[in-house]
Image (spheres, one colour):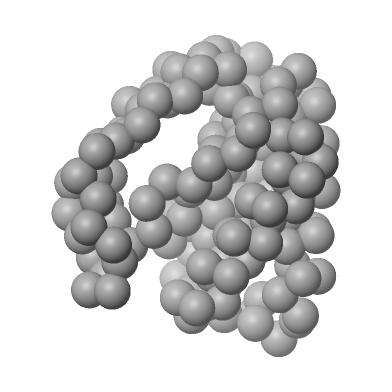
Length: 137
């Protein structure tokens, strides 16, 4: 799993193009501030592990990043452009849903961008070291 995490002062998206036929129809976007935005690429090799073990590793990384940036807001964004390897849609969705629930249970405000869509993105991010963290989990 590859993860590019950014602390953002502001982040918003609007659905632009549906890429999965079974994705729900979504036309409205959302806006977030003072949040961790996690661009996550779940890879085929991740499926060799239990989904809960991958979810725990991801959540621990996101919690650490949130603490370092003094925020309790985390946005999960499926970003299939960090690697040429892709996990199945089902595995990726399950991992995201489990991670979101674990984060909420730990007191974080969480959200997911619409899965199965290309999105128009706008973000404003500060320029300091821990505002951008790349990881291979």
